[in-house]
Image (tube, rainbow, N blue to C red):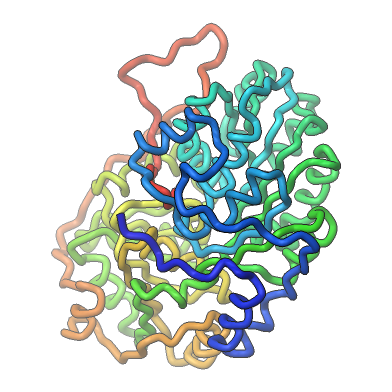
Length: 471
């Protein structure tokens, strides 16, 4: 198993090394990390070094997880010891198991009362909620812990039923969880372990009021863990208000530090941008193409289908069953181009995805890092390409500097050999493609509704999940 390069686990020396290598613009986006009065525990060299239930260790072996990734080795000793943890690691670095194993180990042997979970994971998107649930499912089962996932876009009554039946682990998006609390279907006063995954997005102003309201309801003396790929000043507000003497572990903080990831700015003209996009989409292999708006995703997907490319759109305007089905088609290769808004920038893992294209440049460096993080995951290689119009060049140069990335910049046109070398672009067939509409399948739940048994031949669609330490 290939692992990301291990980095120093001494926070102060590690921070000084990173600061000396990165431009001032990048450093100014991160807040001053809190000083801990209690030193961190030494990193683990193996999972066997950690005080975890034997069932978790044996499940790791069955899942083929042989040794911890750096973020896991760094954070697990402190997290298992009940410390508040602030963890920074790039997307795909193994954060889910870093907090998940500690949460499960510390919850083992406890039983939740109806509607009162014991551990809470807050995430910004439905897709990430399902990925976290799937990644932790075999481990939770091995120690007899029940889980529930509550997100918008699916039946709230089924989710209320799951909570009423009892769930030790709750994975939730803030809006739907707030709805359930308002209905009296959930209480958080027994939650003693709280995790914020993708904490940078959770700290954005759109989420922050809901997140703080929820954190105010969990047990005040419980453990809090915040994990993110970037740590900006909004995260600082959560850290200072809700974490007590947190230990900070910073591993692989930037996609720009990933040596297996290439970054390209492709200079294109307005007149040729669509043809360039279509040629890249016609490559042999899957690709995620990011655009800004929902209608732009639908429009590009339709144009690509007309040109002979098996494309589908993914955005917040789709129902959750449609989104699940589209992701399953992409995972299986029935769809080769996923045209997405930022809803796909976090929480989606597709094995072997080697190309991400920003058809529309991202809004800021954080969006760039998370979009690019869909490739080059867990030590694999990948390429991130951004199509840049003349009017966008200066802003993209600033964004790359802020992200700590030095990209290759190339002028290209559709049909260029250089475009083919970088992206595998080919001329589309021009033969229109018709895909079956995403089925309106029922939502996936941790258990069927009372009185109903799930038919054996009707499995809900699944997002690709890796069962490696990179989950």
